[in-house]
Length: 168
Image 1 (cartoon, rainbow, N blue to C red):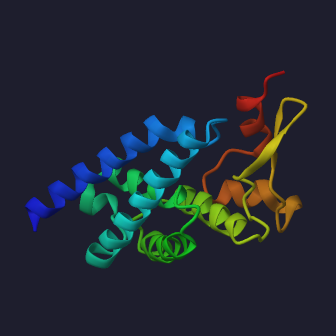
Image 2 (image 1 turned 180 degrees about the vertical axis):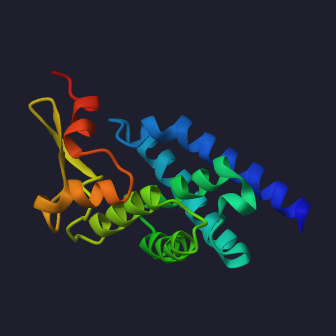
Image 3 (image 1 turned 90 degrees about the vertical axis):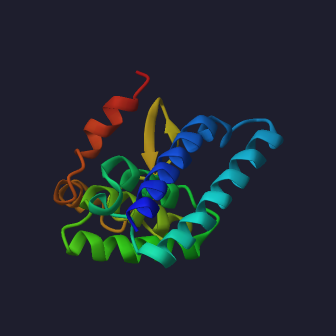
């Protein structure tokens, strides 16, 4: 099993590195670049599903901090595979409840999954676009509680987040 886990750790970190390299293509004007991104994220989503079959959620205890974060990133970007995102969300929720995963990443994945389902997000982590140089979140269930919920998950207040991205 130890060799399998070492290989899994390397595989997850390699997948995240490929994700980072190709992420710029996600919103490219070139359809071929967009397609390359979609194929990569679909391949990664399929593989994450296989990993979840074998190991459950790949926690930091199992694969280390970097590879656990890589698994989260892969789930986060499996936008066209809602079944994979929902499953990752369930398994990650169990891991957070057991103290084996962080609530911050779970909050981001929950919002991403909700937005992909066409529902309102909870934490305001998913950005719909930019208006007057500032990010605008997809609609939230309880916008008046957004910062309180973000704080509970270990996410900075929305205004601080906006300030980082603001072009003004």
